[in-house]
Length: 352
Image 1 (cartoon, rainbow, N blue to C red):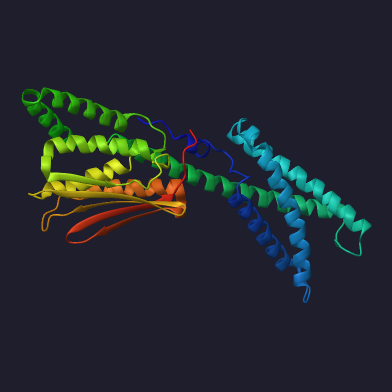
Image 2 (tube, rainbow, N blue to C red):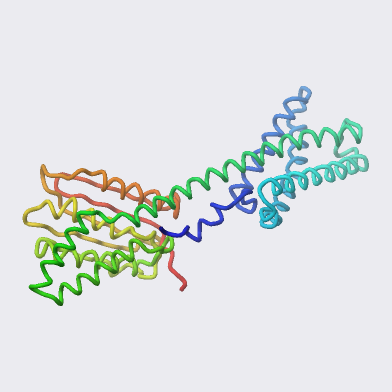
């Protein structure tokens, strides 16, 4: 089984959300502003809404931003204390900050009463701040925790799907390869030995524990091994044209992407054509993106069950979405004579 991808460890083991992330900060600011609107609507007098809202917004944002900054700094330490302890530590710390800032705000109001007025006693203002902040902090932290858990579940599901894809060696391919090797042992022992070595390399690549992403060079080498094995079986019926000279070989791509697509092209396309056909693999660099397409001819009125094809495509789509979000696309174009898969994703080169 494949080990969990390093890039996803922080999501799969996170207890608290990443308070340093821009998305989390935006959510906190939106929650603070929504609370300001609700509190203002509950207490404003006619003609004073915007004034009261501005004062309430300034106060709540003053509480939210320093609190987020503190959570950003202490999160790694707090998580080491355990789930419950981390939540309690953060909750208490945020409450203390709210009370301290409430005291400072009230003192500033007393000193600069003409600028900002709080129509309440010191104890009343502090108690109201404590009560409201307790409810809001608890709800906000719960929401952020649930959001973090949702992200964690998505990552774990994707890791399971990656492991399933890595373990997916179609029986028909393995049996066909072994029969081909058996037939070569008498007619061409040297070629049979090379085929065994290729099959071993392919099984190792599929069943080992690679990282979540690999270089294009390594990914294309695995696909080339698969091509050589299938070429022994299909002979002149199989032709693969590689037009990938423009691709940077150090660019990163989710592992086990090209080989499953090449396998689909051969199994669902070339193998069903009596005269065989050509699989075309093209790759281009377009500004900061890479575009790779795999196309194959299809047999008219002949098709296998497409569950395996759909499983591989769904797996690849999910892994591309996790790796690149909306910056990547996986498109399928199917006609009566051709099947084409096109991948487009950001060019990120390995530094090692």
